[in-house]
Image (cartoon, rainbow, N blue to C red; front, top):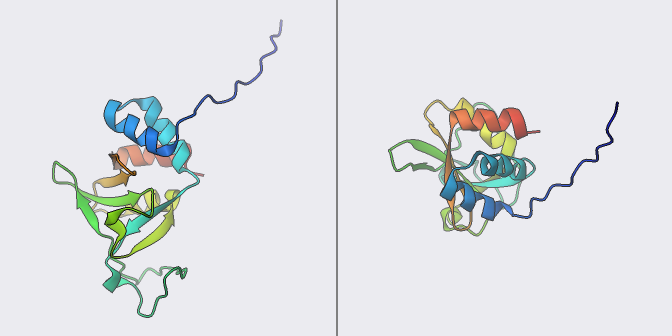
Length: 146
């Protein structure tokens, strides 16, 4: 005996900003999973120490970072004292006023996992933020990063 089933279209109508807010407020697994899916194909903005960038770099210029490069990300400290890399979802954030780099989300979380001094990352939306420790980042990478 067989049954014909048709896939249901996703009923997800929330944008990334709403999902970040919902995850921050309720800490629901479903919100975390939706957030990971929405971030998968996005770029995030990373505040950097502009003095650590190659000299003469023009705004908007693409660069390939070699292993010898020492670009300093501006880290933030969590309420419990952990060091976090910040991923900003919009380029209008005041955290980016002094300069920033743009990076694909999957590349960003891979980088965070490699940096031993970091506890994880902060995802800063327009109004809300969440912290992902390295275990959550590993999950996000395994399930939702292309």
